[in-house]
Image 1 (cartoon, one colour):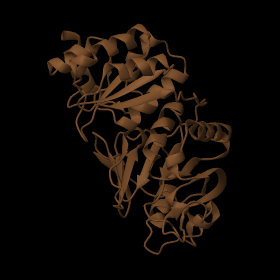
Image 2: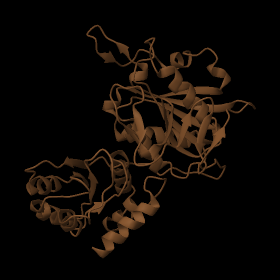
Image 3: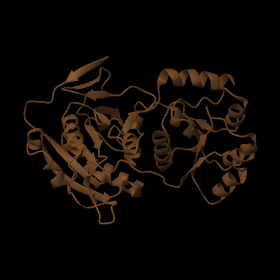
Length: 352
């Protein structure tokens, strides 16, 4: 199932650290709240005096923000920097806040699909200046992974290695704050790093990013009494895409059908996921889901909220026509959809 990878003993790899702020670099203000701009990237690298033994690390500042303030412009700057510096480094490490780290790892997964080098994101639940911080271990392990012969986007947190498009933050207080959504972990960290046998090796083929994200997208979480007018009025304001966090396996009240048909008429894609913390969107199971499915909404099977929302933002920015959005959303690009489960769901959809 999995294979071990030892940290290379040969010449040190060149790693570019992209610093984006977050809890890992925060300090506690007089008010008792954590604030940005305490530790810089250079200070983070001093958490362990021997960290230079792992890699030759260069620092570049992207932002110094609480990741709650993350925008698509910051993602685009990350992608642009990686593409411009791609030939100069063996791997890339990104430190940022945990609140939107899974959104960032998913967003980068689309823009950097097919990349031949490791892109590793990490952060911390406790600021690095605090004695009990998890920053040191997360940073060291993220550096270790970034030196390996891998291609793709990954999250390193605690003792887990998670595929970027499957990452989800599940706790605001536990140090083991992230999990793999609807899949097994890409790898685990113990004495050695143990990765899935399916881990994609790095390559030296030419690489070009597909940058850009459309942020004119809205997300609705269904609650009893939600009205179709909420959909139509949002569309009339010029929104480009809609995400629905529906009930159960993708059930949507029949009272919303007029709103969904209006979205179809205006060629605004509506993508549906489940509100449940686990499971998949299978809209043909119940009549409430089936009726909505027949209006042209898009179910995304076992994708996470972070993956499906950033994928929609990315597809819209790439200029994918409305009629092709569904196929692209349901296509497994980088491991965000389980192909065998998707085939079952698609067969159910076509026979509904």
